[in-house]
Image 1 (tube, rainbow, N blue to C red):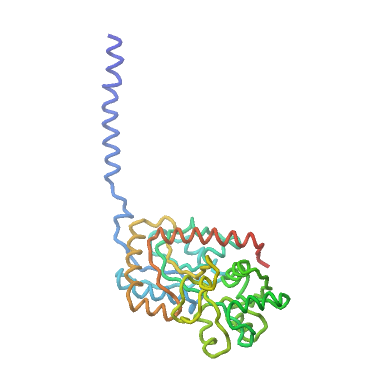
Image 2: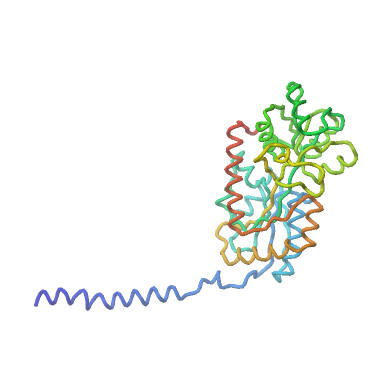
Length: 335
């Protein structure tokens, strides 16, 4: 009798409990997530650009905003929040509500700045990647009077005159600084770094001959190359830019593995729902895959590069790791 009661107790008491749990769990699973089921977007969408108007990131963001307004059915606009090498605007975007109504266009400096100095955000953990938009190779330039007509001759000149070898950049830990650091290690030369405090000032230092060379944006260097004030002797990307089709890449010149390009992607704050990210990724591809948009970006030195959120996530992590290692190895630090 006692044995029967022992067996009966867990069965008779446990069955209602199990049924109750099943009903409870089923009820919980059946409840839709209000955020996931709400239509998107519900109001205007803001694209933060952590740099001033007129920059490449700003121009790309404005092209995206114009088209997104039409495709999303809500006003989409650009808000520039510049300052502190992009930290102010990036921190603002990272702290925004993760509902898809605040986005950010992030260039390569998204990962370089926190690799170089403390920031209130992590480029990998604080954002959800939406999709890459474009990339732009850079160009190795030297002054018109530099006695080197090609890259091989430039390297020979740098080795022959080590005391005079120098390169310009807009500032410490800028892409020009880091890209040249990688290059000089690859070719076996050492040059003095001359930070000029801005892109235009750095390029003018090369024009005037006060520094030997620089790695610069193709769009910025092209007019001075065309006018004969600069010589373009190599490109940094995987393929030649149509804007300088006669200038070989460094890989073509015998430096395999040197593929460095400035890239631009669209990001959302961490925690943004996956359906929202997926929708934005689809719209981004439709916008920038249009032939007219590809042509417009190509005219400014950018190639459209589209992919999944996961593709941009891998790029972001890889670039963050790369530049952290370069900065650590070279002992680069803020002055």
